[in-house]
View 1 (cartoon, rainbow, N blue to C red):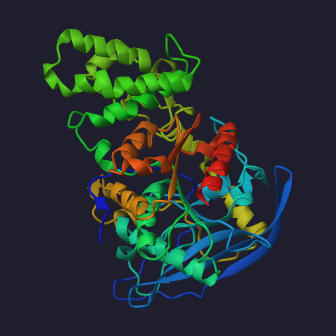
View 2: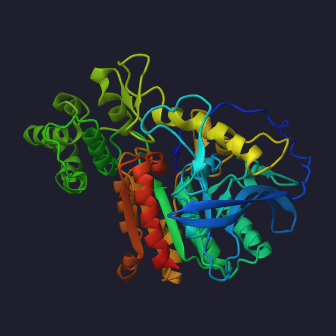
Length: 507
């Protein structure tokens, strides 16, 4: 049964690391690809977290997944970290993945909760190599075993045998392929009775929400679900012409206010960011929503009053807001806020500042947040894979592969020669939480994230139709960071502390 619905385009992650060596040319439709042997490299390590030394085993390898006929069609690359000597019936197991779709999972792997972390500069570009890799004191390895998974078409994960893009490149096929990988992993590693968690970032939250339902229907009940920087319902995002839907403008407004607050563009800046943003939330779905609903019937006096209020919350000039007819899309905001300083703000993390060729355009020419960290993660991961994990392969590691994956993504809409997905997986999550009323969900949000704004996530979770008695199973974390919360070390420390409490309640 299909619960996920794909309708319109949105790209959730814009990162552009250097291109790597190309793989073999694509096969013709009639020719089957070789089916490689499953591989693994096993190494032993230790990590100290809060004074506790954890001895663990790292396994970097591949697992095959089959189609419904039992024929291998995909080879997933993963890296697993398991605590030595743990009781497998009690030890939690967490599967982690990034999204895109079309992104590998090195961002979560090397930046968030793995045992080793690459050091990057906070809210500014990271200098060129050499890069520092350090023991990660914020790793989740003290709470759970960890399995980082690369989606097919990314990292070293590849289509094999008679498999085709249609078997993986779509909302439902993607969910099913990850579900089959998880089934296979828990089977060969004797983890069926372990408490199980998923942690997804960006489109990874789309996948995780869908997986919670797929796994439940295939005999695997989850204990917990961590949704970082969520995208669950494309219906409430920007779908097209600027005046076709009011709700996105309302849901992005608190992120604009947080960004203006961070860059000191507010005349009366509050010292209490959460309290300030609560005021903006109430205005967004209150007076602002009522004004936008009037369309062209809104009086000139009321239009001016709303524009002045928007100025107070966003720092943008009143006349600019009037010219935009009270509707400010995020890309315009990213260009406009620091226009007088010839700077832009980031999309993935609006704390970062960019420099465009000129200050006259409507939108930023690039995302300074993505450009600031891409090379560091890419180089650090390759060094770590070769030297610490001892994994050898002739394949090129596809850090990101948006062109191939999105080109063939099913049920999307083609924009500018590429196809991007838009769907609603809220029903999947509602069904999973209803059929498994013990399932706990933690929503992690960066205040400065324009890719997946926190107020939109709140709106989605409040409107998925979950029975009120189960709403207590959803908890939230908010951090002074962006889409990739872990780029800010104080935010990562808070995030880890929040997850430690979450795991204690969800096991």
